[in-house]
Length: 147
View 1 (cartoon, rainbow, N blue to C red):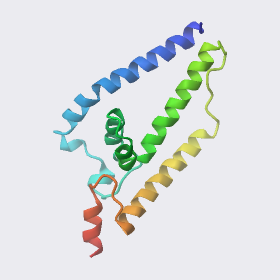
View 2 (view 1 turned 120 degrees about the vertical axis):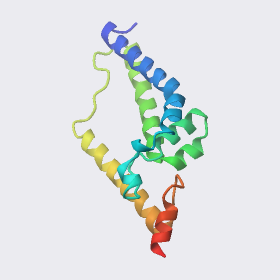
View 3 (view 1 turned 30 degrees about the horizontal axis):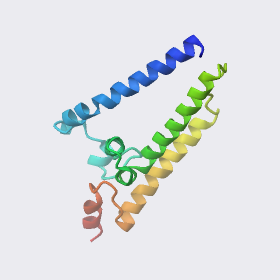
């Protein structure tokens, strides 16, 4: 089958992911009553960070509402798809008893940060100048500010 250590890590990671998915409704219910846990960019500067709407996007994905999930945060949806593809690759490599399961490119982290920053800038420019507000939280603030 697969190597003992890698298989155990694979199963533990998936068990943690499953527990996280099962706890998401409780997290949403608890945090909806806690206003002090807000995002500084969102609540004080009226800007979206790269992950604003990410929880709503994941919740929409879990309810198979793909278009709503993309509207809330396309980056998070892309990351979920990327993670699923990588998961299949790792599973195939484990089943083939390959020594190296998966390696992240050396400059992959730099590319990831650049994508996050570019996405954050793009979604804020779209909101401020063209009124495209994916989560319907901040668009009114910026429209009132412009008038």
